[in-house]
Length: 425
Image (cartoon, rainbow, N blue to C red; front, side, top):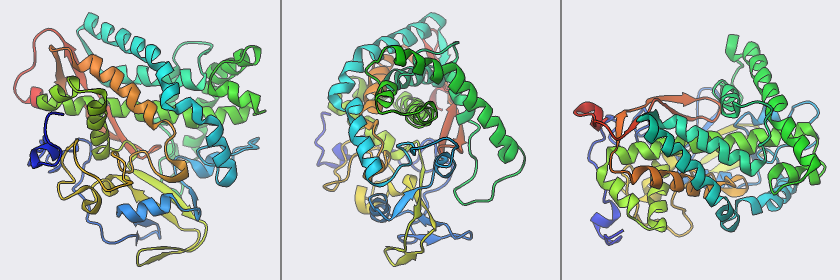
C-alpha cells in the first residue's frame, strides 16, 4: 500500500458512504442492517443465547466449558461405527493431539509445496474462461476449491468424475435447523436425512473408498494416509473427509467469489490488489473476509454454567456466536467498522479477519491455505484488464454451514463490457 496506515486515507482507502446493496455497509452478502449489540449474551425465545460482542465471543470460543454444536456436530458425533469423533467435533486432549499431528499439512512451509499445483489449476481455469469468453465465477471457484482440498485430504482416486457435484449435493441440502431446534418435517426432516445419507453414501463409495484403497497400496503425503497410519477405520476416515474436505471446499469457494465481486465493483481496490505485494494483497483479502465471514454463526453448547458479561448462561444451553456482528464490533475494529479498510489498526492479539476463522482450539486449521489459494487464483484472474463483471450473483444462505451462497456471478474476459447498472452491480 502506498498510503500511510495512520492517516484517515490510509486506514480507509476504500470507504463508501452507502453501499449499492442498500445495507449501508461494505458487505455485499448481508441482507439485514447491522444488529445492535444488546449485551454480551442475550437469550431468545427458545432459550438460545445470542452473542454479538467480540470479547464475549472470543472468550467463549477459547473456553474449555463449551463444546461444538454447529455444522451437524451433534449428529456426526453419534454416527454408528464411529470410535473416534471427527477432529472438528472432538474436545480436550484428543482434539489437541489430533490437531498437533495434522498441523504440518497446513503450515506456511507445507502450503508452499501446493503452490505449483494451485497455480496450474488456476491457469487452466482462466484459460477455459478465455476460450469460452464468459463463465460463472462461482463454478470456477468450486472446481479450484474442490481440487485443492481433495489433494490435501487425499481424495484423488474417484471411481467416476463429478466429485464437486457429489460434495455440493449433501452440503447444499444439509441440516437446515439450528442446534437444539425441533427437527422440521418433510424434506428438511426424516426424508431430508435419508436423502442426505444417500448422497454421503455416494461420496463414500465413489470418492473416499477408492482413495482409501489406493493409499492402502501406497501411502502419500496426505491426510488419508496419515489416518491409515493411525489405524482409522473407513467410517472414521469418511467423517474426517466430510469435515476437513467439505468445510474447506465450500467456504473457500464462497470466499473467492465474494472477494472477486468486491474487486470487480471497485476498480481502485482491484488495482491496489493486483499491483500490491503478497502481504498487501493478503491484507485486502483478510479485510474482505472480516466483512464477509463465510460462516456467519458459530454454535457452542455450555458444559457448565458460564458467565458472559452480566449474563449467566446455564449448563446445557446453546450459544450462537454471531461472527457477522462480532467482526464489526467498534470496540475492537474502530468506528468505521462497517467499511472496507485493509490498513486498519487492530488491538494486539486481534487478527485481521477478526473471528472469521474462529478462535481457540477449533480455529480453522486451513486458514493460511485458504488465503494463499484464493490469492493465487484471484491475482491471476483480476490482472487481466479486459476481465469484467457481466452480472452479479444471487445471494442465498447455506443452512449447513450457516453462511452465504453466491450463485451466478458471471464474468467475461474480452468482448464487449456491459454498461449502466449491470456494470455497477
